[in-house]
Image (cartoon, rainbow, N blue to C red; front, side):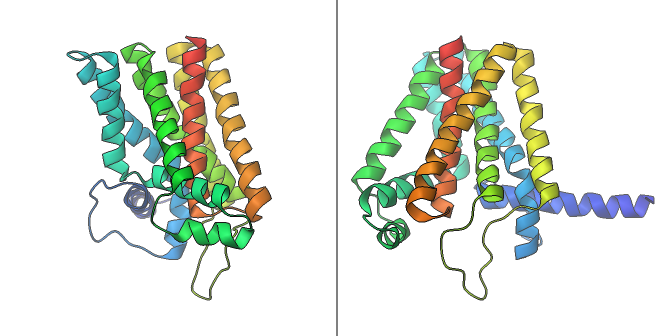
Length: 260
């Protein structure tokens, strides 16, 4: 590969990274980032790395706030920061999925409910309990460890969503101009490699036992949720991906609280 070829490839990958950041967060990116359905599909491989970015910023806020505030207050500020960074993108998906899966008696009715932007009882309760658990579990950890666990939760939770994209059919009808979320085989391998590097970092910080338990609980919660929506809908929706990310993330925090 020539130097010019390498620079061109690097520019493409940088554009895909920025597109992933733009899609999953509210973090400002240049307005001239190239966009197409194909590029958005190829950008899926960077979803776990976006999780590292969001979790890393949240971890820095947690560390700084813990110098002057109680653990609970520091965690609340950290979680609030990640919500601002993402525009509560995944949390909104979790709430909509809970409303649809809990309130719809049929597949069609469940999908219809998920399109409603208003939050219902199932969504409010599910989201409230999930956020409360996140704060309680993270507040039970030491500041430095909690920061690393926060990074792992955001990265591996997004890897769980990528896995659903790669292994599960899309539930909604597809129009002529509609491209369902998907990931290429090479993209899946890049996302998985990122997730494994994050797990390796968790091994170095907290030991192999915690990393193994975190991986197991992340997979178990995400796959349990996947079983529910596939059974009800026959596949996934964007809201289901948000719910998968949230439950995978919660599995990491639960593992840390149980182990440490």
